[in-house]
Amino acid sequence: MGFADFLTDAGVSMLESWVTTRSYISGYGPTQADVASFKALPGPPKVEKYPHAWRWYKHLASYQSEFSSLPGDPSKAYTTYGPEKTEGNLNPKDAPKAVEADEEDDDLFGSDDESEDEDAKKKREENLAAYKKKKEGKTKPAAKSIVTMDVKPWDDETDMKELEQNLRAIEIDGLTWGASTLVPLAFGIKKLQVNLVVEDEKVSIDDLQQQIESDEDHVQSTDVAAMQKL
View 1 (cartoon, rainbow, N blue to C red):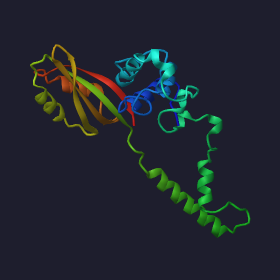
View 2 (view 1 turned 60 degrees about the horizontal axis):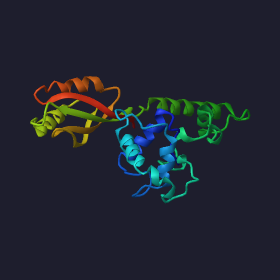
View 3 (view 1 turned 90 degrees about the horizontal axis):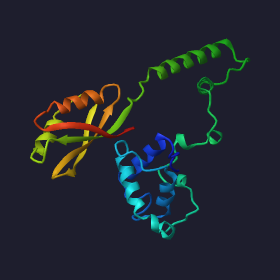
View 4 (view 1 turned 45 degrees about the vertical axis):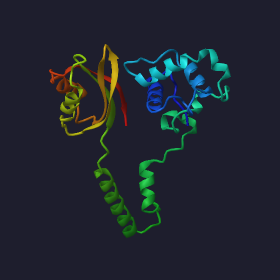
């Protein structure tokens, strides 16, 4: 288990995903897990791209004078914390040896022994061909992304309920609306922050933003706060 390199977008995206539903890396208060992760970052993540990681980083910065006294093991690397192990975290030399697809498929229908008779060999080849045809016919699952979008109103008098109703009335094949919340901006103005899942081949985020912004009575602008492949 563990985070990937925080010097890469993939690593910071893992952190963003991890702290989206958490205030701290581990547990319910700041620990050495937060300290190790904080020090591994070269600076605060970009708030436009990683709003939750930026929030966590700024919060941890307020504890800098207490880092040495926080609970936990300071000798542990930040890569020992975070989500379960993924293929991206594996060292290539530790990865299991891949089995050649053709070799694996052949084994399903017996060995290619030179001593087998012609009828058995023909039957095996027919079974193998039928299996490969069936395997190739299977459709791959559609690639999807989860998006956090900020929708900003014109002013504090904008009816945010109507804004959200109009937004959720947008129906596109491959689009699924998720949870939303109102986030304070300034001067009593609140933006709507909404999560959505899209099928990458069916839904254009740019086109979706234009469709949302066409509600000119309520919407001033939209921004993609975060985006991650599922």
